[in-house]
Length: 316
Image 1 (cartoon, rainbow, N blue to C red):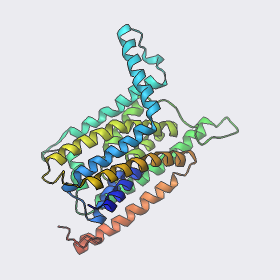
Image 2: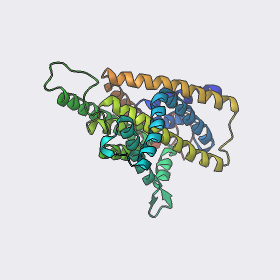
Image 3: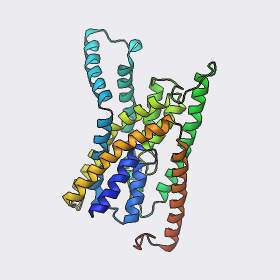
Image 4: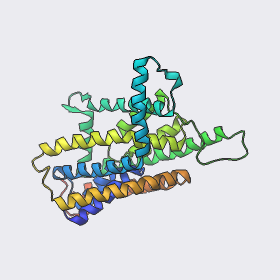
């Protein structure tokens, strides 16, 4: 892998990890175009996740620190008998809802009967197909979910302001998650392991469908993504160590790729929040639909011709 390849993949990972366009889908497409997909690239993928982890922790460090402090106060109140579910402040409520939102991830470790694989393994096998036809279909699903999120957000704003003369792009919907909200977002996060399903976009859309304020829903999905990114990096790291060529990569491209993914990821969070605040999410609806349809056409052509149209390599 060259430094240029590392820069391209780091930028793609940083942008698409947080923008609602699917990092796994775009990484699969990028690697398909560059002809660098495969087991030998696993460790590099792990380190790109680490770069985006640095970005989200840096952006939300104040909220993360407040949640850590609130965790300590919660433990104290539980042991002193002062804890009351009905009297939780915003941080304590968010803390519990994050834990509940993470519980559905354990479903990914359930075995699939007759395959000898877990659900997460099935998703990974779809990511490593010689064509990106599954990724293309999933991008179209992401586009649909984003569109539904826009529609429901407008309904939330209409309900919140139906008795007011003014309106606000930010204030529609509830600011706190409930148990059902957290479970729904958690289940969607499981679905988002499929290549092409945007984790940030799909979980944001589900939050909006549940009537949550769009900015609060976005903050929730980004913070919820921290343990998810850690878990993904850990699992891919184990696979990389087991793979014969998993750690076979030069240091310079690795360092450059991680740095680029971290910087671009931080900027992507800023950009996403701006798009959401200014009601320009339709751009991502159109983008994911165009890319999904375009790569679907490419995949069909590749299946007919039997070769990768970008590299000329045989598919099978």
